Length: 265
Image (tube, rainbow, N blue to C red; front, side):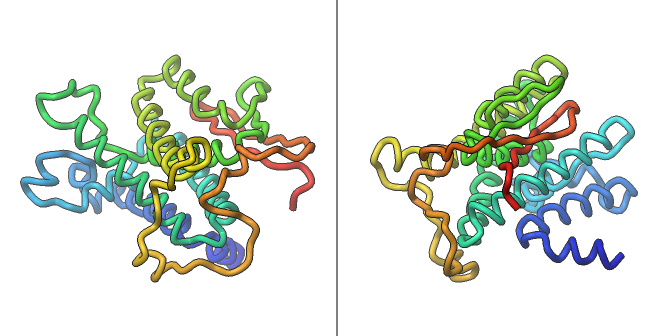
C-alpha cells in the first residue's frame, strides 16, 4: 500500500486529478451510485435543465461492462502515460500552460459534442455523449507532434515515426470498429491546439494564438529553470540529434504506442 501511495503522490497534479476523476466517476457509475443518464453529454438537459456538470462528467465517465472494461483500462493507461509525459517534460516549468492545454482541448471537445448532438441536425450515430476517447487522443496527438521523430512500435512489429501514429489509429478504428468519429474529433482538437500554439507562430511568422490567461498564471505560476522553450518551434520541428529513438507498446484495439529515447533515464 505504501508503494501505491508513493507512486500516486509522485504523479504530476493535473494528470493525477484527471486520472482519479476518470476512475472514480466510472466506478461510481458502475456500482449504481451515480446514474449514467446524468453523466453523459446531452444538449437539452445541459441547457434547458441547467445540468451544467455534464460537460465535465462526459469527459471523465466511461461505461464499464464486460465488453468495455479492457478498453477503459487501456484508455486510463494512455491517459496517464501521455499526460504525464507532457506535464513532466514539455510543460514541466509551465504548469499553467499545461492546464490551459487541457482546458482548451476539453472545451473544444465539448463544443463539438454539443453541436453534433443537437436533435434534428445530425443522425443519432453521430452523437458524442461520451468524450473520454477524443480527449485522450487529443493529448496523444499533441505529444506525437512534439515528438515527431520518435520511433514508436505498433501491432505486428510495425515501427514508424510518432507523427504518423494518430492517423494509423484512425485507419485501424475505421477498419475494426465504428469509433472513427471519436478519433477524428480527437485529432482535430489536438491539431487545433498545436497549430494555434506552435505551427502558426513558427511556420507562418504570426503570433501565438493561444496564450495562457494571466489569472491562470497567477494560480499556476511558471517555475524557474528548465530547458524547454515556449512560443518557439517545438522539438519535433527542430533539427534532431543523431541518436536512435524507439518505443514499445502492447497491441490492442487502441494500441497507442509510446516513444522512449534510448539512453535516457
